[in-house]
Length: 108
Image (spheres, rainbow, N blue to C red):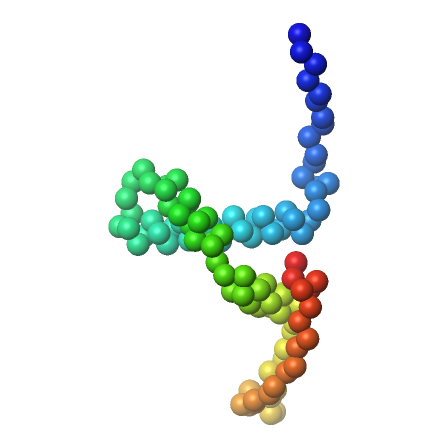
């Protein structure tokens, strides 16, 4: 009989949350892209894996600059809050410029 070391499986709650969140977010992007491919090719039956693998391939080959843009947009949407200006309760047009110092440590 062979000796095979056995380790207790790590509880999902014990894993680092950012890693789990990133994995879930990527899986959701793959799922959406695979469905887009499914519709693009006329909803063929039995090609789910082909569409999934093609979606993964497309998303993994995304240029790093686009990934950084997406991370920056996601961060801003998640963290920033902006209240539009009003005049006596009615919204008013406004134009503003905001300087943002982006640090890659903020991309989670």
